[in-house]
Image 1 (cartoon, rainbow, N blue to C red):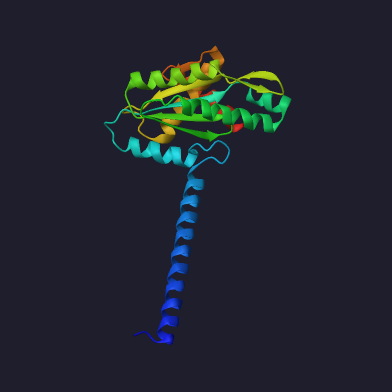
Image 2 (cartoon, helix red, strand yellow; image 1 turned 135 degrees about the vertical axis):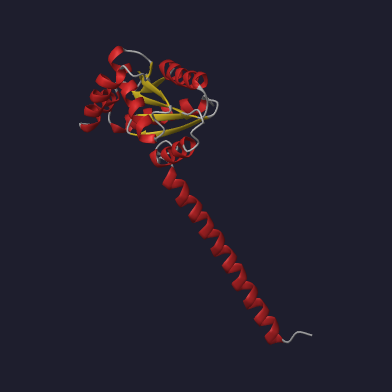
Length: 213
């Protein structure tokens, strides 16, 4: 038969255990939140540059794996920011993120690199890579967002680069995609695939553009 003291001690022990469980749950929640925030863009909720590069490097580690990146840069985004303000620009970025996510592209990992640049990493062959890039460009071309009652287009220029034996690093692949994207802007094309002829002119121009960005 329990004494009064044993009953009190049991109650205290139980209360302490409950408090520890609650604290442990709070710590796990806080850790999960911190991890999510570290790998996701706070504005759009998409994976951020850090998460994109980690995912891309993991895929490229398998040298036999077909991998590609499609770099999307919104057209006239600076003009939209200047004309309507940064809040309008943020709304457009969120709309673009939602549009890309809604496509549910096969074997694709979509994130925001920085500013008005988004990246689609495709874990698949050339056909799937091209289809994903084209689907993204077409969806944004059809999409508009009303800003202060004025329809604003979400059109983007897309540079597509596929890993080969010459480039199996994230930085090399992104450099090619950036060059192709800049080439798409110069020629008014929705999607431009990197090839060796773009390496001399477009790559230099893209590097200069990033330097002064």
